[in-house]
Image 1 (cartoon, rainbow, N blue to C red):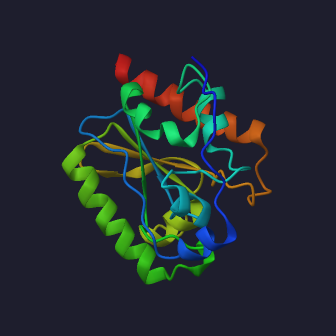
Image 2 (image 1 turned 120 degrees about the horizontal axis):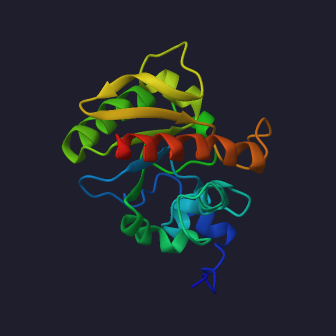
Length: 191
């Protein structure tokens, strides 16, 4: 069944109050893929939902690449667990832009994320943003796609940031990148 309604749009006061707020992880042991954003934007922090800002292409890319059988809304984020998918962030605190985060925060976020992945052991960790991945994991030469680094048994894949502000990737190009990861997930589960 397709989603039928959206949450109330945050007011300007809601967005101002969202600075520094956190949103819950959508995680469980043994997932196929954990998608990791950089940090919650103010819209996401205000609503409590990952990738909630209108114009963010995460949810459409997830569906169009075949990860979910139907389009989903951000407020359905916990339904991802039924598809063996999860969502978390490198840095927990909400901000207007990822550029507000310090390299030290991203590095600490990478260490915290690695601890989560060692505990939960998903098949893949997909970090959404190559620049954030490079900083968080001190991998200056990382590019989009599968990485040589692993966290225990968890393989790492870097995807483009799905934010509407990322003009380098159209939705169609994002879908291609997400589909490449999906094929890797299927290939690994067959072998």
